[in-house]
Length: 109
Image 1: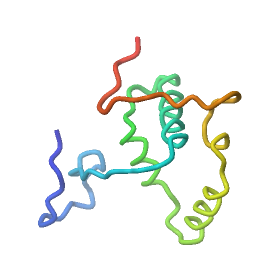
Image 2: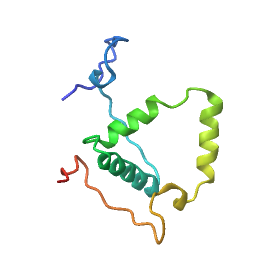
Image 3: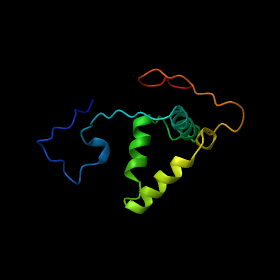
Image 4: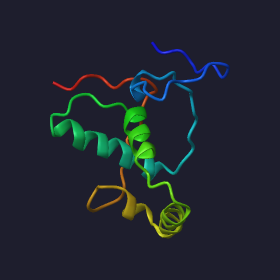
């Protein structure tokens, strides 16, 4: 288990990102966004990448976001116009948001 970041210790720029100390963040967002995250993870596992955590996928998405104000503002403005059906991958019918317990998901066989 990695330790929480010690703010007094610098992190080497050469250290592989997944070996860096971690910090915990709490994210509050709409249920359809959470459902989409679960659906995206399901797509990755279908493609035989292996086990992927919600944290790892979110970290990868943030790490690869284009770091320009204009691109970030464009994403935010587009997000503000979305409906629930625009977010989830479910193609039709009422949106079914799966309940989820905290922690790791069981291995699929």
